[in-house]
Amino acid sequence: MFSLGFQLLHHGPKQNLTYFKQPRNPRVGRLDGEKQNHAGLLSDDIKRTNGGMQPKKLAETVVLALDSLKKKGLTSTATGGSSRATKYKHNFAIVYPVVPAQVAVMCLLFLRGPLTPGEINSNAGRLYEFESLDNVHEVLEQLASVEPPYIVQLPKRAGQKEARYAHLFAGEPEISDEDDFVAEPARKSVSELESRVAQLEENYAQLKADFDKLIHELMG
Image 1 (tube, helix red, strand yellow):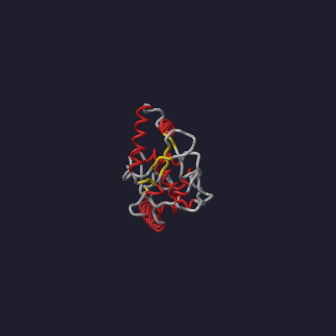
Image 2 (cartoon, one colour; image 1 turned 180 degrees about the vertical axis):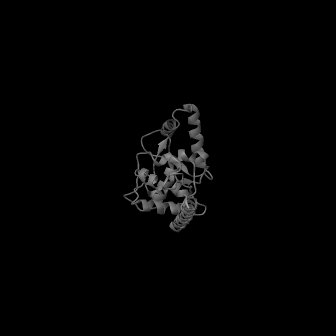
Image 3 (cartoon, one colour; image 1 turned 90 degrees about the horizontal axis):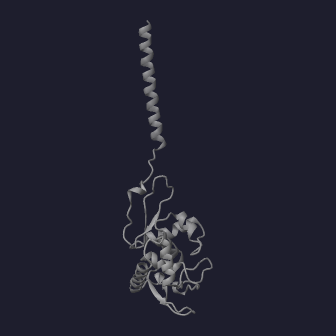
């Protein structure tokens, strides 16, 4: 349902940032005032499911999801334009106290699932242009520090440099065994390694001395 709702962030011919109650920002892409009708949302969902659901059944699901989102105040119908089809726009920034950069992050997490800061920075171009990767980290920290938090940082996966983030609007994300998560790579301090090496060298010296003594006794 959230995935469907946030498709509204990606589509539509108009740009209108008044709903954010924020000054116009030239770095902000098409975040609000985006309008999408049933056909557009249905087409996108068919692509996302690779045709796995019958169009009629999928259409019913779209209608039910839109109705549920509308009851929560997260979407509303849009008027105007030449199209006769009913269009919808998201109201996420009205229901929740968020700014465009935060909406962009939430949109990506809703649509794409857990992402690393680098992946968010790479895929946010049409929604919001972050100044740097540090800027992405700042926004993630803001979304994770509110009460209740909007997102959570997931444990790193084996071989992964960056941790991923997931939204909490559908509850705590499930961590599968296939993801092969590890909390932190095992790291041993330099002093510990030096201590072990010194112990090995001492043991080697003692063994060598005992061996030499044995050889001497046998040869003597």
